[in-house]
Image 1 (tube, rainbow, N blue to C red):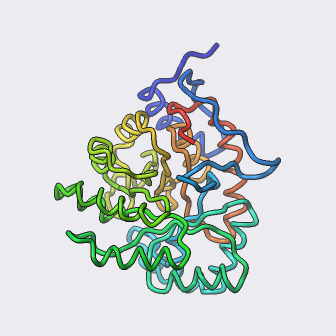
Image 2: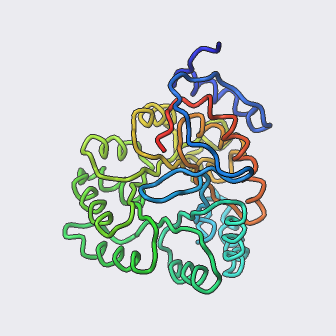
Length: 316
């Protein structure tokens, strides 16, 4: 019988083996800590987990490419290329393709026109994809602007909310975890699940310490074995991956990992396998329409391979 896998040996082994993972090989040893995950759906379907009261596919469609916000290091033309490619009709097509492949939720922020576009897709085009959206209103004492925005969003049909990582990072940095907790409580009072997004690990530790009533976390995670990881120029969102894995191992709330491919620098197989073995319950991935079918297939394969090798029990 293989010996249990520790967090530290997992991180070291994953970083050394990530080039192999990109070619489809697997690494690691089974963990005695891994709980039995929920059974997959029908043959070929994407397995689901729960965020609050919602059944959500374990692979989620990321919204940055759809709002034309493409991390591209110093390749500035990529932003313009994305904007010209992802037209309104192409965005509708992308969401429909995601649904056809079993992805039932989109994570996106409130860029200009996003809610009108999503309403058109749902109300006029028959779309069923769920909306997990972060409001961008200021979170200030009294929460006036924030309250107005999320009340309108819930009325428009938002399925779940989460605190924008940029806001969460700033609030925790400024010592205002209390205000972050107040915003989460307000959002949940409107009858939808609410999570906390974060780039900085301090957000998670502060929320856990202060018992912020979030239903889930959206936290960055990716390995470091890619050429631009050390440039620190729009190319690295999780330099402390070992600390993230260690912290999240003790967290009992669902975890959506994002920036898993470091904005395209890490191949999907390597990225998905790393974060699933590290313990993420869901994976958020930005995808162009032509990438969706292949990425879904890769995700199913890596999910099956990673189940016995996880170092964090499944939360949902």
